Image 1 (cartoon, one colour):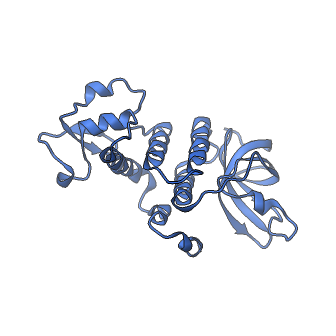
Image 2 (tube, helix red, strand yellow):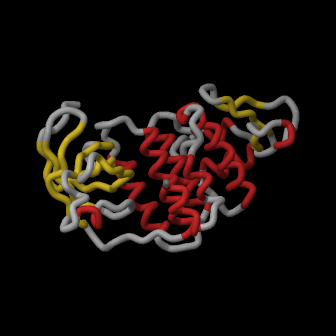
Image 3 (tube, helix red, strand yellow):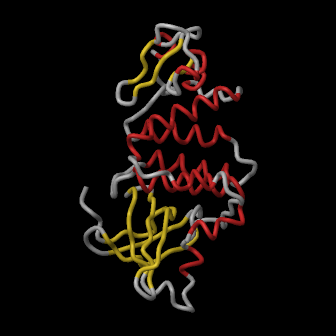
Length: 249
């Protein structure tokens, strides 16, 4: 699509920001109509600027920008609603969502439905404790929207393709293959029971073994897309909160 030269009051979230030169920020935004966009917040580091207080992750914003090419200039930002505060594991989970979007979304690709799902997920994360089903549902939706869907809830053929008492091996890029014997996790981390695959497809998260298998499955599906670079935010979920500032350096 052609890059818009002037955009006014676009709903957006901040995925990441970093200092640029002495007084500015480079900000990665996830917007409802333009997807992932990079803007320069000129003069945001100045003492009287209120922009840094608004350019926070997880806060629903309305942003305006103008310019040509990949890098545009932020001209206005305002809070769309109340400030959002994520705490503990929910904060680290939010950072994980942001990292996935930063690494998997191409700039200027519109993903309106994903934007809405992201917003709803952030709302859920505001109320601790962190529920694993929240992350699994988001990962599953993300993969489906990007065209790498596995076990789509809307795919009615799944109940014919998987038998509860059989086991299946997941091959990234190829899908599921029926195993000749009743293999378990010890036979290979990419082997799953048909019973749990059917539950994952239905997003029935009532059993911990289903959540565990969903986590393994999404890791396998995401790995080829993320490449060799580790997912840094995953390690935060295993670190105490007081280490956050140190880990961000």
